[in-house]
Length: 342
Image (tube, rainbow, N blue to C red):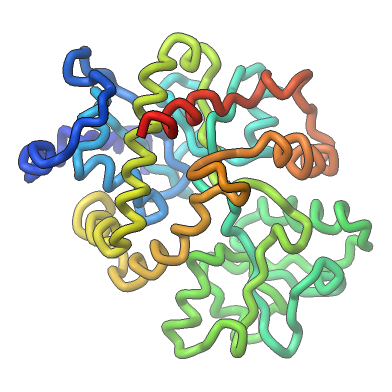
Protein backbone atom coordinates (compact mmCIF):
# COMPACT_ATOMS: atom_id res chain seq x y z
CA UNK A 1 0.00 0.00 0.00
CA UNK A 2 1.28 3.49 -0.81
CA UNK A 3 0.28 7.08 -0.40
CA UNK A 4 -1.59 6.75 -3.69
CA UNK A 5 -4.22 4.78 -1.77
CA UNK A 6 -5.90 7.97 -0.56
CA UNK A 7 -9.39 7.02 0.49
CA UNK A 8 -12.12 9.62 0.78
CA UNK A 9 -15.60 9.53 2.16
CA UNK A 10 -16.75 10.83 -1.21
CA UNK A 11 -15.95 7.38 -2.63
CA UNK A 12 -18.40 5.74 -0.23
CA UNK A 13 -21.55 7.86 -0.39
CA UNK A 14 -24.03 5.03 -0.96
CA UNK A 15 -26.65 5.24 1.74
CA UNK A 16 -24.96 8.14 3.52
CA UNK A 17 -27.58 10.68 2.46
CA UNK A 18 -30.30 8.78 4.28
CA UNK A 19 -28.14 8.41 7.35
CA UNK A 20 -27.41 12.13 7.43
CA UNK A 21 -31.08 12.91 7.29
CA UNK A 22 -31.66 11.00 10.51
CA UNK A 23 -28.62 12.26 12.45
CA UNK A 24 -29.04 14.95 15.12
CA UNK A 25 -27.13 18.19 14.65
CA UNK A 26 -24.73 18.96 17.47
CA UNK A 27 -24.38 22.72 17.09
CA UNK A 28 -21.01 23.04 15.41
CA UNK A 29 -22.39 25.30 12.71
CA UNK A 30 -20.71 23.11 10.14
CA UNK A 31 -23.42 23.37 7.47
CA UNK A 32 -22.92 27.14 7.32
CA UNK A 33 -19.19 26.75 6.81
CA UNK A 34 -17.10 25.87 3.82
CA UNK A 35 -16.24 22.18 3.89
CA UNK A 36 -12.64 21.36 4.64
CA UNK A 37 -10.52 18.25 4.20
CA UNK A 38 -8.56 16.58 6.98
CA UNK A 39 -6.45 13.57 6.11
CA UNK A 40 -5.39 11.07 8.76
CA UNK A 41 -2.25 8.96 8.32
CA UNK A 42 -2.97 5.58 9.90
CA UNK A 43 -0.25 3.43 11.37
CA UNK A 44 -1.66 0.17 10.04
CA UNK A 45 -3.92 -1.29 7.35
CA UNK A 46 -7.66 -0.45 7.43
CA UNK A 47 -9.19 -2.79 9.99
CA UNK A 48 -11.44 -2.58 13.02
CA UNK A 49 -8.68 -0.89 15.03
CA UNK A 50 -10.11 2.30 13.48
CA UNK A 51 -13.71 1.42 14.30
CA UNK A 52 -14.73 4.88 15.46
CA UNK A 53 -13.35 6.44 12.29
CA UNK A 54 -15.38 4.12 10.06
CA UNK A 55 -18.55 4.77 12.06
CA UNK A 56 -18.01 8.53 11.90
CA UNK A 57 -17.60 8.28 8.12
CA UNK A 58 -20.58 6.00 7.54
CA UNK A 59 -22.97 7.83 9.88
CA UNK A 60 -22.05 11.26 8.58
CA UNK A 61 -20.53 12.60 11.80
CA UNK A 62 -17.55 14.10 9.97
CA UNK A 63 -19.84 15.54 7.32
CA UNK A 64 -21.99 17.23 9.97
CA UNK A 65 -18.87 18.96 11.21
CA UNK A 66 -18.00 20.21 7.73
CA UNK A 67 -15.10 17.77 7.48
CA UNK A 68 -14.23 15.70 4.43
CA UNK A 69 -12.36 13.00 6.32
CA UNK A 70 -9.80 11.16 4.25
CA UNK A 71 -7.21 8.63 5.30
CA UNK A 72 -3.95 7.10 4.18
CA UNK A 73 -3.50 3.43 5.14
CA UNK A 74 -0.39 2.32 6.98
CA UNK A 75 1.21 -1.09 6.98
CA UNK A 76 4.52 -2.73 6.12
CA UNK A 77 4.64 -1.25 2.60
CA UNK A 78 3.48 2.27 3.47
CA UNK A 79 5.48 5.26 4.68
CA UNK A 80 5.54 5.76 8.44
CA UNK A 81 2.63 7.92 9.53
CA UNK A 82 4.83 10.65 10.99
CA UNK A 83 6.76 10.85 7.72
CA UNK A 84 3.46 11.38 5.93
CA UNK A 85 2.60 14.12 8.42
CA UNK A 86 5.97 15.79 7.92
CA UNK A 87 5.53 15.86 4.13
CA UNK A 88 2.21 17.65 4.48
CA UNK A 89 0.16 14.80 3.01
CA UNK A 90 -1.81 14.46 6.26
CA UNK A 91 -2.94 16.83 8.98
CA UNK A 92 -3.26 14.18 11.71
CA UNK A 93 -1.05 11.13 12.18
CA UNK A 94 -1.38 8.07 14.39
CA UNK A 95 2.03 7.93 16.01
CA UNK A 96 4.03 6.35 18.81
CA UNK A 97 5.97 8.06 21.60
CA UNK A 98 9.60 7.31 20.79
CA UNK A 99 9.22 7.83 17.02
CA UNK A 100 7.49 11.13 17.86
CA UNK A 101 10.53 12.26 19.86
CA UNK A 102 12.80 11.12 17.02
CA UNK A 103 10.75 13.16 14.54
CA UNK A 104 10.97 16.24 16.76
CA UNK A 105 14.73 15.78 17.06
CA UNK A 106 14.87 16.04 13.26
CA UNK A 107 13.20 19.46 13.43
CA UNK A 108 9.48 18.62 13.17
CA UNK A 109 7.29 20.72 15.46
CA UNK A 110 4.80 17.96 16.27
CA UNK A 111 2.24 18.11 19.08
CA UNK A 112 0.17 15.40 20.79
CA UNK A 113 -3.56 16.22 20.91
CA UNK A 114 -4.89 12.93 22.28
CA UNK A 115 -4.49 9.17 22.15
CA UNK A 116 -6.80 6.68 20.48
CA UNK A 117 -5.92 4.18 23.21
CA UNK A 118 -4.91 6.00 26.43
CA UNK A 119 -4.54 2.51 27.91
CA UNK A 120 -2.11 0.68 25.66
CA UNK A 121 -3.37 -2.75 24.50
CA UNK A 122 0.20 -3.93 23.86
CA UNK A 123 1.18 -6.92 25.98
CA UNK A 124 2.66 -10.39 26.03
CA UNK A 125 1.20 -13.90 25.88
CA UNK A 126 2.75 -16.78 27.78
CA UNK A 127 1.84 -20.33 28.71
CA UNK A 128 1.21 -21.80 32.19
CA UNK A 129 4.45 -23.76 32.09
CA UNK A 130 6.46 -20.51 32.02
CA UNK A 131 4.12 -17.67 32.91
CA UNK A 132 5.12 -14.04 32.45
CA UNK A 133 3.33 -11.92 35.02
CA UNK A 134 6.03 -9.54 36.25
CA UNK A 135 9.20 -8.02 34.78
CA UNK A 136 11.59 -10.47 36.43
CA UNK A 137 9.84 -13.35 34.66
CA UNK A 138 11.36 -12.09 31.40
CA UNK A 139 14.95 -12.72 32.52
CA UNK A 140 16.40 -15.55 30.43
CA UNK A 141 13.26 -15.85 28.29
CA UNK A 142 13.08 -16.51 24.58
CA UNK A 143 10.92 -13.62 23.42
CA UNK A 144 8.94 -14.06 20.20
CA UNK A 145 8.60 -10.65 18.57
CA UNK A 146 6.46 -9.40 15.68
CA UNK A 147 8.80 -6.63 14.51
CA UNK A 148 12.38 -5.50 15.10
CA UNK A 149 11.21 -2.44 17.05
CA UNK A 150 9.92 -4.78 19.78
CA UNK A 151 13.55 -5.19 20.81
CA UNK A 152 13.57 -1.57 21.95
CA UNK A 153 10.53 -2.16 24.15
CA UNK A 154 12.11 -5.25 25.71
CA UNK A 155 15.35 -3.44 26.47
CA UNK A 156 13.41 -0.56 28.02
CA UNK A 157 11.49 -2.93 30.29
CA UNK A 158 14.75 -4.44 31.53
CA UNK A 159 16.28 -1.01 32.07
CA UNK A 160 13.29 0.49 33.87
CA UNK A 161 13.16 -2.45 36.26
CA UNK A 162 16.90 -2.64 36.89
CA UNK A 163 17.13 -6.15 35.48
CA UNK A 164 20.03 -7.89 33.79
CA UNK A 165 19.63 -7.59 30.03
CA UNK A 166 19.30 -11.35 29.57
CA UNK A 167 16.91 -12.60 26.89
CA UNK A 168 16.84 -14.15 23.43
CA UNK A 169 15.11 -12.20 20.68
CA UNK A 170 13.21 -14.48 18.27
CA UNK A 171 11.54 -12.88 15.18
CA UNK A 172 8.20 -14.59 14.63
CA UNK A 173 5.65 -12.53 12.69
CA UNK A 174 2.05 -11.70 13.51
CA UNK A 175 0.69 -15.04 14.75
CA UNK A 176 1.10 -16.52 18.27
CA UNK A 177 1.28 -20.05 16.90
CA UNK A 178 5.10 -20.24 17.34
CA UNK A 179 4.50 -19.87 21.08
CA UNK A 180 2.26 -22.95 21.04
CA UNK A 181 4.87 -24.78 18.98
CA UNK A 182 7.49 -24.12 21.67
CA UNK A 183 9.66 -21.79 19.61
CA UNK A 184 9.75 -19.29 22.46
CA UNK A 185 8.63 -18.65 26.02
CA UNK A 186 6.63 -15.47 25.51
CA UNK A 187 5.05 -13.70 22.55
CA UNK A 188 4.86 -9.92 22.07
CA UNK A 189 1.24 -9.19 21.20
CA UNK A 190 -1.71 -6.88 21.27
CA UNK A 191 -4.14 -8.15 23.86
CA UNK A 192 -7.01 -7.08 21.58
CA UNK A 193 -5.76 -9.22 18.70
CA UNK A 194 -3.54 -12.30 19.00
CA UNK A 195 -5.39 -13.87 21.97
CA UNK A 196 -8.35 -14.23 19.62
CA UNK A 197 -6.33 -16.71 17.54
CA UNK A 198 -5.83 -18.83 20.64
CA UNK A 199 -9.51 -18.53 21.58
CA UNK A 200 -10.44 -19.77 18.11
CA UNK A 201 -8.22 -22.81 18.79
CA UNK A 202 -10.35 -23.59 21.85
CA UNK A 203 -7.91 -22.22 24.41
CA UNK A 204 -9.10 -20.25 27.43
CA UNK A 205 -7.40 -17.10 28.70
CA UNK A 206 -6.16 -17.49 32.26
CA UNK A 207 -6.16 -21.26 32.00
CA UNK A 208 -4.45 -22.28 28.76
CA UNK A 209 -2.59 -19.02 28.18
CA UNK A 210 -1.75 -15.89 30.16
CA UNK A 211 -2.09 -12.33 28.90
CA UNK A 212 -0.10 -9.54 30.57
CA UNK A 213 -0.13 -5.89 29.59
CA UNK A 214 3.20 -4.18 28.97
CA UNK A 215 2.05 -1.61 31.52
CA UNK A 216 2.12 -4.36 34.16
CA UNK A 217 5.75 -4.97 33.19
CA UNK A 218 6.63 -1.30 33.75
CA UNK A 219 6.30 -0.07 30.16
CA UNK A 220 3.52 2.51 30.50
CA UNK A 221 2.73 4.25 27.22
CA UNK A 222 -0.43 5.22 25.35
CA UNK A 223 -1.31 3.25 22.25
CA UNK A 224 -1.69 5.32 19.06
CA UNK A 225 -1.11 9.02 19.77
CA UNK A 226 -2.93 11.66 17.72
CA UNK A 227 -0.21 13.96 16.37
CA UNK A 228 -0.45 17.17 14.37
CA UNK A 229 1.94 19.94 13.36
CA UNK A 230 1.90 23.04 15.52
CA UNK A 231 1.28 25.21 12.47
CA UNK A 232 -1.83 23.15 11.69
CA UNK A 233 -2.98 23.31 15.31
CA UNK A 234 -2.68 27.10 15.31
CA UNK A 235 -4.17 27.78 11.88
CA UNK A 236 -6.88 25.09 11.85
CA UNK A 237 -7.75 24.73 15.51
CA UNK A 238 -11.53 24.87 15.05
CA UNK A 239 -11.40 22.27 12.29
CA UNK A 240 -9.36 19.93 14.48
CA UNK A 241 -11.85 20.35 17.34
CA UNK A 242 -14.67 19.43 14.97
CA UNK A 243 -12.64 16.48 13.69
CA UNK A 244 -12.13 15.21 17.24
CA UNK A 245 -15.79 15.71 18.09
CA UNK A 246 -16.88 13.59 15.12
CA UNK A 247 -14.34 10.92 16.04
CA UNK A 248 -15.56 10.88 19.66
CA UNK A 249 -19.11 10.35 18.41
CA UNK A 250 -17.92 7.55 16.17
CA UNK A 251 -16.36 5.69 19.08
CA UNK A 252 -19.39 6.33 21.29
CA UNK A 253 -21.64 4.75 18.68
CA UNK A 254 -19.17 1.92 18.15
CA UNK A 255 -19.39 0.96 21.83
CA UNK A 256 -23.13 0.41 21.45
CA UNK A 257 -22.79 -2.17 18.67
CA UNK A 258 -19.30 -3.61 18.02
CA UNK A 259 -20.56 -5.69 15.10
CA UNK A 260 -21.52 -2.60 13.07
CA UNK A 261 -17.98 -1.26 12.58
CA UNK A 262 -16.63 -4.77 12.04
CA UNK A 263 -19.04 -5.25 9.13
CA UNK A 264 -18.14 -1.83 7.73
CA UNK A 265 -14.45 -2.65 7.56
CA UNK A 266 -14.90 -6.23 6.31
CA UNK A 267 -17.40 -5.31 3.62
CA UNK A 268 -16.23 -1.82 2.65
CA UNK A 269 -13.23 0.03 4.04
CA UNK A 270 -10.95 -3.02 4.25
CA UNK A 271 -12.78 -5.27 1.82
CA UNK A 272 -9.64 -6.14 -0.15
CA UNK A 273 -7.80 -7.44 2.91
CA UNK A 274 -9.71 -10.70 3.42
CA UNK A 275 -10.56 -9.86 7.03
CA UNK A 276 -12.54 -12.36 9.09
CA UNK A 277 -15.80 -10.91 10.40
CA UNK A 278 -15.92 -12.87 13.64
CA UNK A 279 -12.32 -11.99 14.43
CA UNK A 280 -12.98 -8.31 13.74
CA UNK A 281 -16.08 -8.30 15.95
CA UNK A 282 -14.15 -9.90 18.80
CA UNK A 283 -11.22 -7.51 18.38
CA UNK A 284 -13.62 -4.57 18.52
CA UNK A 285 -15.24 -5.92 21.69
CA UNK A 286 -11.84 -6.27 23.33
CA UNK A 287 -10.51 -2.85 22.32
CA UNK A 288 -13.44 -0.66 23.40
CA UNK A 289 -12.36 -0.34 27.08
CA UNK A 290 -8.90 0.84 26.02
CA UNK A 291 -10.31 3.97 24.35
CA UNK A 292 -11.28 5.39 27.75
CA UNK A 293 -8.64 7.13 29.87
CA UNK A 294 -8.02 5.38 33.20
CA UNK A 295 -8.43 8.62 35.19
CA UNK A 296 -12.06 9.19 34.23
CA UNK A 297 -11.28 11.98 31.74
CA UNK A 298 -13.10 10.22 28.94
CA UNK A 299 -12.05 8.95 25.53
CA UNK A 300 -8.66 9.84 24.06
CA UNK A 301 -7.46 11.76 27.13
CA UNK A 302 -3.70 11.68 27.65
CA UNK A 303 -2.99 12.69 31.21
CA UNK A 304 -0.21 15.20 31.89
CA UNK A 305 1.13 13.08 34.75
CA UNK A 306 1.42 10.07 32.44
CA UNK A 307 3.45 12.10 29.96
CA UNK A 308 5.87 13.66 32.45
CA UNK A 309 6.04 10.44 34.49
CA UNK A 310 6.27 7.06 32.75
CA UNK A 311 6.48 8.39 29.20
CA UNK A 312 9.39 10.63 30.07
CA UNK A 313 10.96 7.71 31.99
CA UNK A 314 10.87 5.57 28.86
CA UNK A 315 12.41 8.40 26.84
CA UNK A 316 15.24 8.78 29.33
CA UNK A 317 15.85 5.03 29.35
CA UNK A 318 16.24 5.20 25.57
CA UNK A 319 18.33 8.38 25.75
CA UNK A 320 15.86 10.48 23.80
CA UNK A 321 15.85 14.27 23.88
CA UNK A 322 12.87 15.62 25.82
CA UNK A 323 11.12 18.91 25.02
CA UNK A 324 12.11 22.00 26.97
CA UNK A 325 8.58 22.21 28.35
CA UNK A 326 5.49 20.02 28.26
CA UNK A 327 3.61 22.64 26.23
CA UNK A 328 6.09 22.14 23.40
CA UNK A 329 4.70 18.66 22.74
CA UNK A 330 1.32 18.37 24.50
CA UNK A 331 -2.04 20.13 24.10
CA UNK A 332 -5.28 18.55 25.34
CA UNK A 333 -7.29 21.78 25.06
CA UNK A 334 -8.75 20.80 21.68
CA UNK A 335 -9.93 17.47 23.02
CA UNK A 336 -11.36 19.13 26.13
CA UNK A 337 -13.35 21.48 23.92
CA UNK A 338 -14.59 18.62 21.75
CA UNK A 339 -15.63 16.56 24.79
CA UNK A 340 -17.45 19.51 26.39
CA UNK A 341 -19.46 20.22 23.25
CA UNK A 342 -20.89 16.72 22.83
